[in-house]
Image 1 (cartoon, helix red, strand yellow):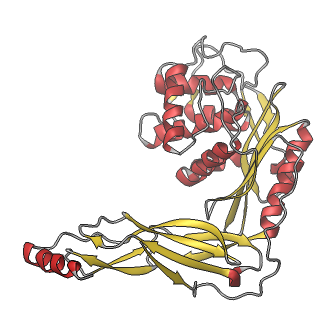
Image 2: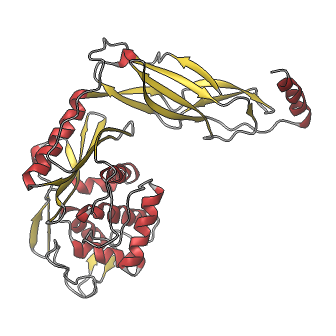
Image 3: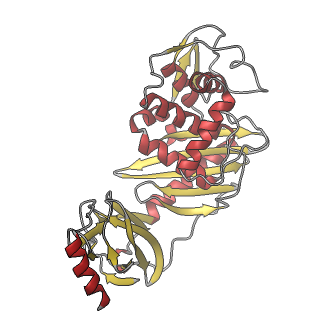
Length: 376
């Protein structure tokens, strides 16, 4: 292993304030997290990995799978679907967009019902259209959950109706929410709709923050008597986006007010700093037996870090790489770790990768390097 200390010269110096992390707000909710979308950091966590019933928050994954099917041309927004009696069956008291058996409805209408009205009937019709049966659709949901790193999540239906074996966590739901914004930015705009009318019935979005905060543009509410009131909210100010997940509040107004407190805390107490641009090398490593003598390492995309306001000057980095580095090297291959320190304490570890691939050299060059390595 080889370590190099780096001063982050790309940061404009500011006078550091407090030497400690901002005190996180204590919310009237069972589980909550605050996630910075740009830096991919969890800023606040409380019972973040506890497995809980997601209720209607499961519809975020339903939408994610449907958006993916549209992107892959398996289904189209203007396609007409015919609801089956099975899809429109009532499961206790549930939110609906009041579809009718046998009456055609467009996919785009179903998506608005799913997202704005949190309609269970829309979720089941979409699930049947994509996977023929809701249980098979749940398998698709679980495949995506695994791919996204949602390690404390398992789905059994498309609606979030309480069933044994269906669970998620505040941490996982934040990852899912971020994936929706990142992977389907155009479709995500549906989450900002305040109301939607279908079949002559106008229904309002239950996310009250859409009316109270102009920066809020999504995402999803949930309620059951067993789980309480929950809300995932997303806010964008300037170029910075925060996602809050608040689960298990006792009252409907609390899920909104506590979410607002959490988001305000993130914007007030933290700032996002650009560490390196995608095409900016962090360092160059000596490369053996390759067609090039050096391999530049960095990040595949612009890399931000979120820190307490006023502490940029206290940010340092230590680059750790594995030596010797032997060709071939693939573009994007992880070659080290950038350890960030704040006020001299470990803060965040970031993987660094090869910015370009390097091929294996010819036999003669490899032989020369093999001899040189003996003396290193």
